Image 1 (tube, rainbow, N blue to C red):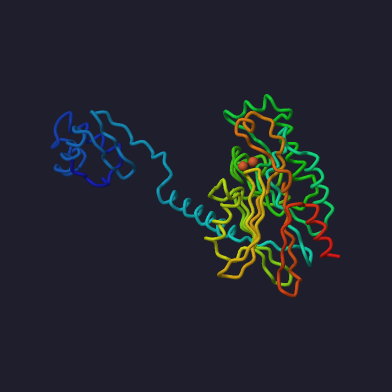
Image 2: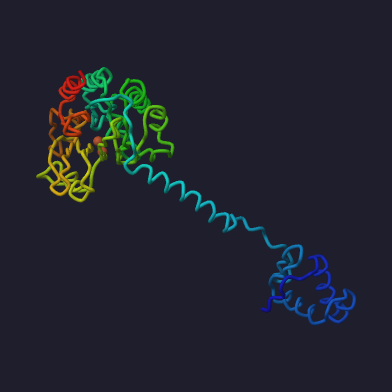
Length: 357
Ligand SMILES: [Fe+2]
Ligand SMILES: [Fe+2]
């Protein structure tokens, strides 16, 4: 159907002329309304066939000889949608880049320790609360000792797994109170918290996860992994790549995922650390290409009473050590930065206190 273009008359005039032409003929209507005969004839054909007439004050929708106004477009104009998406992308990109080797500057000089707290599952009946309380005391009392939570702060069961709350001695509300004690009130100097699979069941960081509100004034939340660059006041740097878990698994090698990450990584990372599998191991090595000394540290976490059906049927066994390994970093050594990894938090804390004496 031919498009008559934008008609330089208001809708009421166009509609009245069409009706007059339909009642008599286009010649009569063109004289009465002082409109070109051919033009009016075109409008009438559109009116009969159904279609749109774009008038100077809006669009007439002519369909089956019923005339209505075209509905307003309920959608955001495409340019505004593109502008909004562009602004969001730029913000997200800036955040993404900021998170890559995020700089952390200790507020004290000299050696520091970074404890790598394995999965707390603090609400689980199998969580070793005596050990956790002992570690909280060490973390609170040792000068220069910071901590990274490697994820799975609580069981946080949702969906089908929510039935498991029924046989546990902790309610979901108490689980949140325990999280708040550990993450906000315990006195631990948190360097970062990573959200593991259990934490993420209630949302990614910044998407309404209850942990967001608990840790808000204490530390930063990281989605699954954190790449941190510790910058000491003498300018020396120390990179830590911590994650809830790294890709890759081997029944013969507990640190297979981190070995893979180190092999394919930039070669200047000092520590790879993870939790998730509730087992521990530590390996110290040297990158043959860069000469970088590195530690691969897997933290066991605190859930060591494997008395539930899941663990019995899987023949899972708990180790005793490595719940919260620690790496002690000395940036004041004449050789440059020197670091040592300990599977036992207390021993690492003693070494740190010795270095800081
Ligand atoms: Fe876990
Ligand atoms: Fe996990």
